[in-house]
Length: 228
Image 1 (cartoon, rainbow, N blue to C red):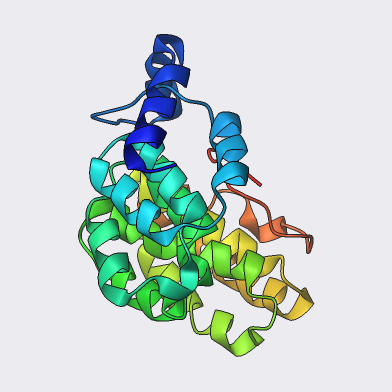
Image 2: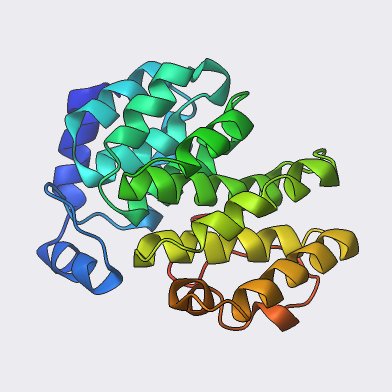
């Protein structure tokens, strides 16, 4: 299928009900067909990896086309420039988290972008930094503990951000890191307790119950239904 065929497929399968339901999940999209993630996953199986098509779909600007772009992109062909360009146009937590979860965290530049994006003033670029942290904790099984320990100061700093979507990303990142193993759990709990005792309201509200989270397989944040 080429871009036009995919766009026609998306248009046929979209529903007004699904579009109207997006705001209930905090998703604002200028252009949306109303296609479910289940349908997108089914189409991904048919398409396989197709990086050229992925780039074209992202450029369309349509919400579901962008989700599909993340699903079929080739992480080994992603460049730093592509990562920055896509991040700059993240429209909501849905496209941000899906891109980070399915594509960007598997690129050679994921760790680099975590640090760069965590300093960004742009809402969903900064959210992307913490989503990437969480996704690396989930997927980068070979990464040594020291790489995740080095991210904890960024999490502490990010917890000061008053914006809800950033706070949820910070929450997800710290939980995911803390669930990798016992050593990282101890380090993450220390950070959580420090934030819980902070005089800054943003830090306290960001992580209300992390002081007691257990070591277990890292999971997705409550507001993100991971399309596994």
